[in-house]
Image 1 (spheres, rainbow, N blue to C red):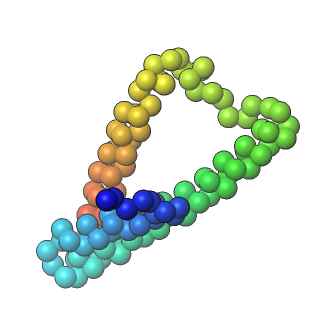
Image 2 (cartoon, one colour; image 1 turned 90 degrees about the vertical axis):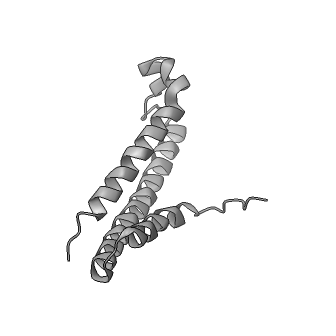
Image 3 (cartoon, rainbow, N blue to C red; image 1 turned 120 degrees about the vertical axis):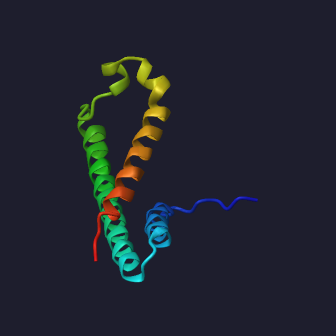
Length: 110
């Protein structure tokens, strides 16, 4: 039976990326440098996600209390195709982000 994800499980996924970078490197010093770089990148994404969460909550609070639309509805703006393709767009962005993180952490030199 698969384990249910708890609230806050997303941070562990980013640190798994750092562990993957550590596993792939051959030399110990290079491996450690890449692991630290991957951890730094993952920490930045966790902090950025927290800031975006606070900003989103603030904007939703303002929208509900002032009865205004601050963030536009993209389905109405871009068209109905976005509603059909939003999962694929998210998957493509996730893959691009993962490749970018991997390549960025492997630029680290000792």
